[in-house]
Length: 104
Image 1 (tube, rainbow, N blue to C red):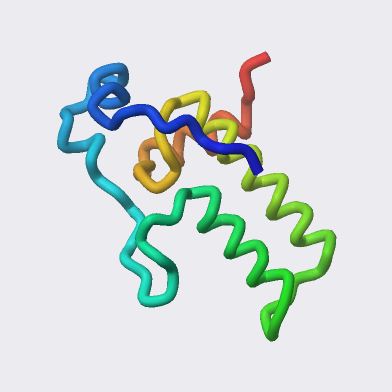
Image 2 (cartoon, helix red, strand yellow):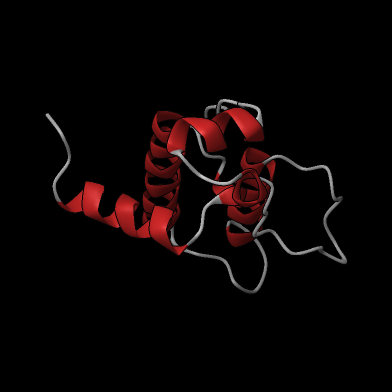
């Protein structure tokens, strides 16, 4: 997967007309298992790796589809300048709308 642009939160907030406090929110919960400094890409990569092995192992085709959807989500995050871990309901609703009718 490719890296998401790491824009400064204040810059992203200002560009989107959001209050600075909104830019600093994070939706990623503290994990008792994962180190706290993982990037969005690291978290998604570890989840895919976990789904490829063990009791919850997914079919190869399902994993390929998960990877494709992850790449689309990271592409969208780069386009909007909002890291996935900072996205809220409005951003994910916009992402779903984009998938239903992408710009040419």
